[in-house]
Image 1 (cartoon, rainbow, N blue to C red):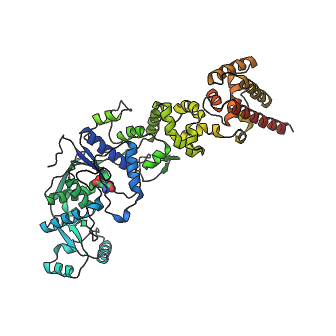
Image 2: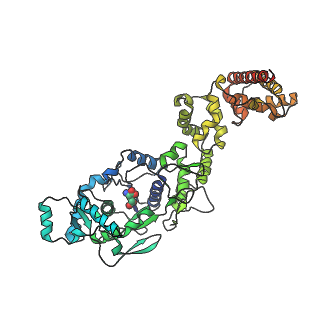
Image 3: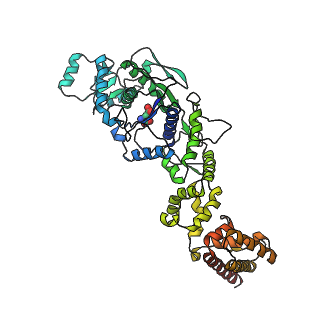
Length: 510
Ligand code: GLU
């Protein structure tokens, strides 16, 4: 007996491995997981791979990685097993054959021998006559004699569901209430294909029953198939699980359904696939927090919450059935927040693969690199995604003589000319040659004293130095940057910058 009351729920995430996991799929899995954890039930992963033409072997890894990345663990599934194994539908083929035949025996389904050619002609004729296309139920009324004849010829056949010709089907969606559909709007859908594989309609209903699923959470796009599912379940004499169709996720423009790939909207890039979010350096905790609030809301007055709090408060009834656009800015904001909460050591290990890829430096080298110890804490509050870190610190991994100054202006202090700026760089070099210890703090004190002594504003002094060591106008805090580079490397860069400015002065005067 299915217990779909308040007891422990059995929910399944049932993806078809036809491509990379996208955010909509991950949100469905997340809500499944939250409901299973909330009710102390089970979260089941079931692979619906009966459409062999659309099967994409890479998608299995993408699925498993995406779910694990978000921290969604399943209690039963292909890799962990469970009492209802196997959890991959292509390995359960026999079961569906038996169940489909049971419906034929009851008169709720029938064998259809129509050839693809006949079906194509039928559709063409329907189209020409301006009629709705759909199976004309030709085989539904075959005589026993005609059937025997087809079987004797060894004709290929499918099994179709015999939809009642009259009346209405009523099913309930938890968020939308009772929905009524006239049976004459429905088609005699195929349950079992000619190759013996079930269609989604049959396999999902059979497995939801055999796996004792209490709640089915799935995307709103499946709402249209629910009447057929109700009829199939009725024909077997089973009970429907609670149906919860989750709202569509719209792209950031709020117009289109979120696509399955990266999109540009108003000159900004919007990601759609889970691995794209991973590659940009969104943290699982931030994504968890973000996605939990897409279609449901933890609390309008509390944006940040833990997993435990989400489990505690989650409720299916409160899911908002209207489509919503993804607030990507919020994801960036949340991610920045979660990044700031990491310890420097945790941030460093999260950053290593990104920096290694983006800077072209081996991870092992970066791990023992002292510069990062100093630079990571100072960029921590400046980045919203892990892939932004390289831009802040790439200069520290260049050789002094490969630093290119886009323009002499970069090295010229405010209200100073080129010659005065050369003096600033030289004074900086003198000071840095001697300062002890070579720490951000001591360097800062020395620089401020020097500025005072020279009678220049701190900014006019520090600007050229920043430009000289980083080749950039904006960089992490100057004194930590200098400490990270070390004395020798900093002096080389200052000399490089002085040479560049002098050359420029000569050119300007010559
Ligand atoms: N296999 C279906 C999909 O790809 C699952 C739909 C459902 O959850 O019933 O989304």
